[in-house]
Amino acid sequence: MCGRFIQCSDPQDYADYFSLELDPESMGPSRPRYNLAPSQDVLAVRLGPDGRRHLGHLRWGLVPAWSQGPDHRYTMINARAETVADRPAYRAALKERRCLIPAEGFYEWQAQPGGKQPYLIRRGGGQIFAMAGLWEHWAGTAEAAPISSCTIIVTAANAAIARVHDRMPVVLDPDRQAQWLDPAKRDSAALLALLQPDPSADWTLTPVSRRVNNARTDDPGLIEPAAGP
View (tube, helix red, strand yellow):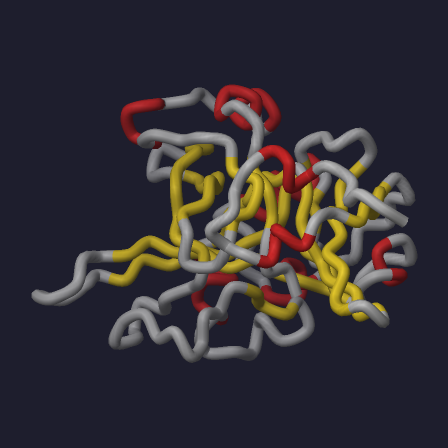
C-alpha cells in the first residue's frame, strides 16, 4: 500500500509538469509537505468542465458519493489495481472521476530485527512523478460539510521496490497520464491496461528516520538518510 508520501515542490512546478495553467485563487493555500498522511488534503490534477487540467486539493481517503459520510474504519486511501473495476466504492469513479496525484516520493516500511525501518522511495534524483488516482464528491449533510476526496491506485511492486515492499503506486508516464484523464475513455479493460507497475530501474530506496512514523511530524529532515548503519 501507499500510506505516506511527499509533495514538496512549488505548485508552479506541478503546473509546469502537467502543462496546466495555475489558478492560485481556486487552488487555495499550499505548502511543502514531507509526510502526507490519510485524511489530510493533497494536491491533485483533474479535468474541469472546460476540458482543461486543474490543480487543487482533495482529501486523501475516498468517501463514496452514496455513503453516509467518512467512515474511519475504512479509509479507502488505496485502491488495488486488480479489483478497482469490481469494488462498488470505485466502479463509477473509475469510469468518470479519475485524477493524477503528483509526488516526489513515498514511504514504505520493512520489517527488521530492530523494528520496522521506513524507506523513502524516490525516482531518479527526486523528480516529480504522477500517481493514478480516483476522486469522489460527497454532498454532505446538515451536520457535515461536503467532501471532495481521492484514493491512490496501487499495483504489484517492480523489481527495485520489491526489495522493501510488495506493492507500489501506479505511476503514469505523460502519455498514459493523458489517457487516464481522457473522459472519453470509459472502457474498464482499456483503463485497467494502464495500471501496470512502473518498469523504470531508476528508483532509489533510502532508509530514513523513524520520526516519519508520527503523522504530525512534517519537516525537510524526514527525507534525509537515517543516521547510523
